[in-house]
Length: 98
Image (cartoon, rainbow, N blue to C red; front, top):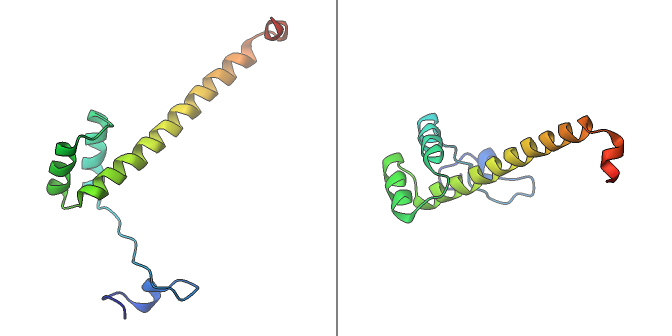
């Protein structure tokens, strides 16, 4: 055993030790989502307060927000692309060459 983890949880195929991936609880995720809806940028004071409230490290909160912004941006781009594509398909072909 390494640091209290089962051997199968702590060893990769190559035999290198790894940490078990920690997941957030549903309560933590809901609170983070709610805060993201308020504002997707995270001021240092807000990050520390949120981390303390949720029992997380400030770095975990910062990384969650960073990942969430990336997912949000991807969804916005996909939506914009779909709208542009739909509008493009509605236009007559001769308008494309103007």
